[in-house]
Image (cartoon, rainbow, N blue to C red; front, side, top):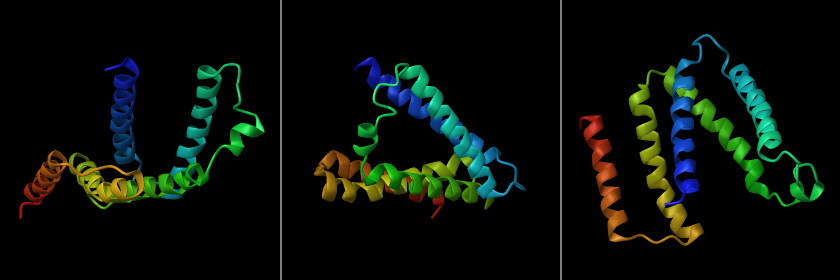
Length: 146
């Protein structure tokens, strides 16, 4: 495994831990939309800093050609991110435990992504994946106490 392979997953795990801890820690009396504005203002500053640090010469970052290569997905992701942020904020405010909310969400999203992967990204369904699906579903069933 390459260091980029491991680093990227490590970053994802650390960011996810921070994400859920911060979501759970947002003040109960804070307006969710004002909280999102603060979150995304911080994200813009962090992204600009990352551009300066990781791409110090600004190669193609500020050129029109860099922006014209974007497709609809870059912009739709913004809407998805807002929905994700509000969804988890409301999930935690409604009483979900931090130890279970992400687990339920991630397992159900993963299961929903299987047909998406097959239909739109030509991914296959193997016996191993099928067994994994059954294990994931049985895990949720065990957690719900049915």
